[in-house]
Length: 461
Image (tube, helix red, strand yellow):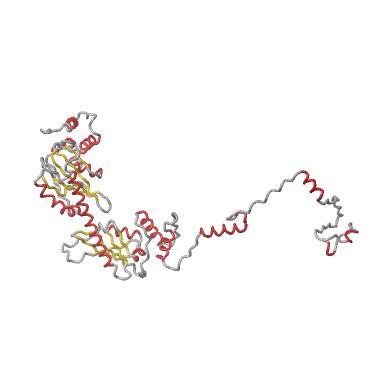
């Protein structure tokens, strides 16, 4: 498996591959990821001398191929006169389209490692980035003189890998970069732009179908496409999460066969909803020959009044995924009559969301009690009772007494009046009460007869 223009870069790896196929140990200079890829191919039972691969039927109705065909048709004329080939695969590495020329035109319908071993398309799908595989890095003998570069195709709305675009050519003298890397990346960019345009067009078609169904007053309308969910106010109040999940499953299962004539009316069918919610009349929405979603009009059970549709309420601002998840979860929980607690940092919209949830229930305006204001009033009351601990400047402390000299203290002691010595209080006999009067002089009668019991207005018994 050698070529006349084999470079010194590939010669050691080519010898290592021959040792691996003959069961001998690999040298230490073989890259770890290449040795692991060869071992996976041996584990999957891939023969290195594969010549006639199976020819499964190509997948039909691929949205990726439909979007990529306008781009690939523009590439086919220059590819036919060159020495490169372009291959488009889906997310399972099944070949959807191929064009161009290579020195060894052995094209396989399936590029997964289980079928053909290590290759650039499988590596790009696994790493979600551009990948290159050159000559002896491949496991098959047919690709020993081929260099290939692959770029994954990502969905514009969620970043999911939809497939790969591979540019293959003759063996490059150096292992990287591949001369067709720019072509592969430009092709992927054009295909992703086409996918974005078509997805927006499909969303507009689904939105138009939803608006037509929602023109009837009081109708509960839901539009779904498997990724997005659009409900009007009546449907949001009527449908529990279990009913919405049942409608979500209708976007991929339990669909009737659609008609081949695009001018015929879209097929409709009836689906009973769980939890005694009612029935849904489901209409498929078509765009460019494919079903892009469904529009469901829910009929409530007999006897359940339908809430009239009022003016639309202002929705809380915010488009992030955590915020939308929090608001939708709060709306689901608010449909029950159980208490609901909203927590979060200051200024995150808790009060506004609570008013919206209560308004959706109907009834009188809610009573708002601000716990922070009540706490502030209690603090102000405590401040009024204890001025020394209130808010504001405290009164200055009393000035310390002046210190005087010894002579001044002696002169002050002479000027101060001397009080007579106190006599010990007289003992009161049993049955008598001794009363002291702080104001006024002592009555004469009480002064002349200290042993008698006191009475009258000046005594206390």
